[in-house]
Image (cartoon, rainbow, N blue to C red):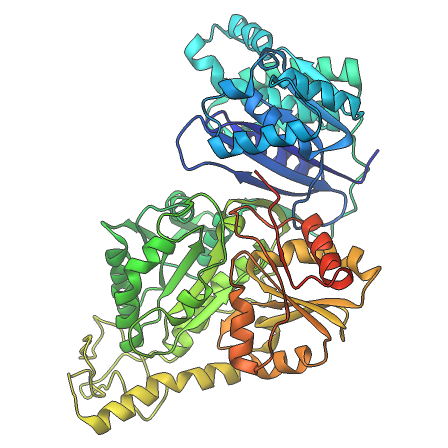
Length: 632
């Protein structure tokens, strides 16, 4: 038995890879294991190479790593792409019909990827360009090769249930699920529950998949046993849920009192709004208590403008988008800043610039989120590092927005959005809803009363009469270009930042992991937290090292950061970007120059093994900058 297994399922986009990942993640979670999985996919509907990468463990794990214990290659392209990702004593599953395929005949493969793989094969002494030659090489490396006849399994299924040739391909994912289930010894009841969760209401599909999976599992077990069967999981202290990052954001918003969500469809943000559409009727103890309006607009400008309108009317409102969409929202963001509107923008970063790589991740929009907009105005920028942080931060975003009457940007990324994780049920005991100063208004109501940095807020439709304009205005909202009034109103808006900085608890803004007084310190934010946290125990065996995790980036907790970093000898910025924007932000606020960098801007996530190797390169080999590249 083993304590953790890393596996990868590769195949063409549209072949059920997402279903494979979801079903297996749910099944393993039901058996008590900790699971994190991610789907890397091309921005096309069908055909290009994609894969699901999963880590399952008896103990909490938060990131992915290479090499893997098991690869399931659903086509020849996956054999060529991932043959170097397997451990020497791992298991590599192939479809026998793909073995004769030549790498040059794979029309879906990117030309540059093909060239790179062929060079790698030549260096390893693999002269033949067929998939079978790669498999022979793996055998020589002590990799266990499992050859399955995919077509035969599908034919048996089609004959059993009279499934048409056109429809039978949708069951390919069942073979992948079965292979993993067989080698890991996953209980069939757990697989069935995973299928039912994924294919809710489609019992015929569940029935067909159960037949197929049972058939494959039986063959795997009889030939290979369960060589990757996991130890019993550590007992959990609470119940767990399984969800994507998009779903966790939506759950946090629902608990936080969301009433209006606007959006224009864009990857990877749209899944959050689609999930909210499914959950838009709110009940408690079976009784209807309200609903959520989820509104798809004609563009992103309209999306934020509609959310602003809902906020002015008193609804907790938000919009979700990605980089190109946020670019269009910036004019409305400035309007919200001028009018002190408590609106939340959930911003999922992806690979830019322009359309860039729309289904790949990045952290290159930090400075854009902090400074977007014309003119100066108060805002708060929050970034979550993992699924559980995301849940609480989604609630805090609404509380901060309404308490201080500022727009709040919740800055996330594709890595978190599309990853599935097992997380404990959130602790609701400390969750509070803070709506700030709300009044019904009066005939002489001053919406922007300058006696308070945060003026009492009345809603549109109440007894209060008020004006909102994109122009500079007086306390009532009337347009005014008087220079002294300008000073008063401008300072009123800007000085909120000092108030927010003073009142936000430090523990919600930044956290130090590992050594409390580290000689070596890594700094990062967002999803970089996960591989660094997983790498820390191994790094601590050799180094006095810690990790400083930034969670609220505006306002910036500069005094605490200066105190911690000033004691370190080596500071390493870690980020999914080229310029390590968090390092620039630290230098701007503290004067401390970040001397070393670990960066990755391929659009793929940083892996635990990459962090360990990169830190060693910096500390022992005196490297200044390490650029990470793993992941096809």
